[in-house]
Image (cartoon, rainbow, N blue to C red; front, side, top):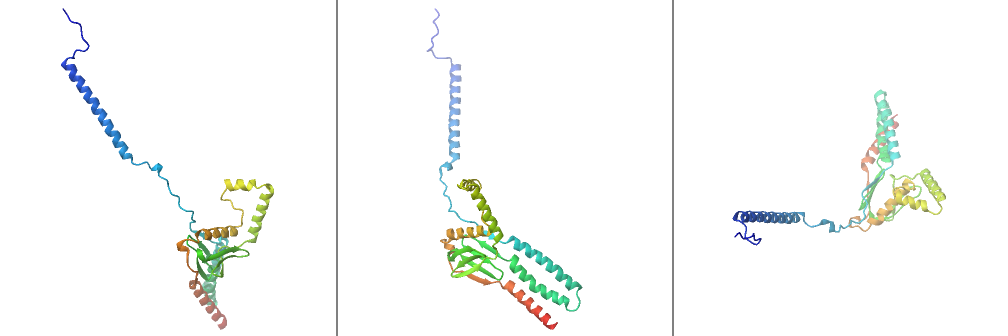
Length: 259
């Protein structure tokens, strides 16, 4: 008599072998996946997004102030004097070439000194003022104040030094005053100025000289306590400008005296 199939009976040897092989493959794939996930997690490293970045204190980068109109006028004067002087030296007769040479030797350094040379360099530690015949180095701690009246000036160690590179224009100052008055009349409650301050932070209604002096005052206040901003003022005469000017003046005087 035939016995019915029992589900609990063991399978054939071929079926058992294939079942063991499939289980081994699944175990191998699971172990490889675990190792791969562990390797990926190890390669990612720590999460840098959680690290809080420390913000540096507010500082000013180096700034240079020069008179664009002065430089343009100086270049024109140098071109005109060079054209007339060289033409006189080439085509002149008698003492004319020597007078032209003496005149150029005297005039060129003076024009450069008063138009192209003036500059103001403002750094984190000091203020360097380059005037026509002097160069003044002022550590911020020695600066007592800056003012812009009819001229731009800096006060340091009881002395006053003029800033030739920041000329004062009364016309620009009046124009800036008219713009401020017009803005105030258009919005007497000040909402327009607040709106401009939020949406246009770079807009400044002051005259260029007043804006420059305001920036220098802010730099002096922020940087006066720096370690590199300590020390007394230093003044150096610009002999590279004074020497050729004196030589040209002496030569021109001799030529005129011989005349």
